Image (cartoon, rainbow, N blue to C red):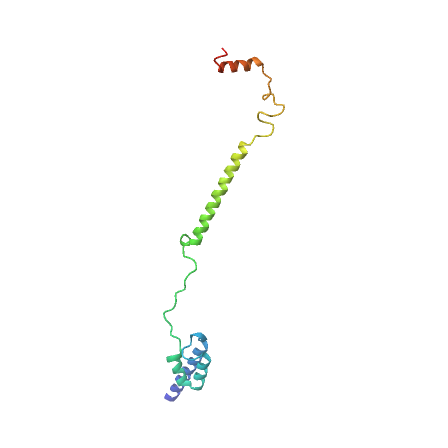
Length: 144
């Protein structure tokens, strides 16, 4: 029974070592190339697996924490804040342009109105000349 347990342990170490060599990235192996380590483990089952675990296997440091591309909260994200500020500026500029356009439209004379309108009875000289003379005489003290 002891012989069977030893044989199973040797087989487990051999298979585990071979699978570990195969699954390891080629640029992470130490000592030899990945192909050389596979050959060593296949032809020297116990010694090759032991050498792989002691010499060839890459040394892993603490697992690297996955960094997130964006901060957790939107108000911490500089891109979000930059876009928000740009949107606010665009809206303020659009509002300013709308107000300027409204002011310009309100200052434009409308067709048919104003001092040079055609045919408007209020703009012509339909009044008597005496009325306009009295108005100018009131403003000028020498005429009185």
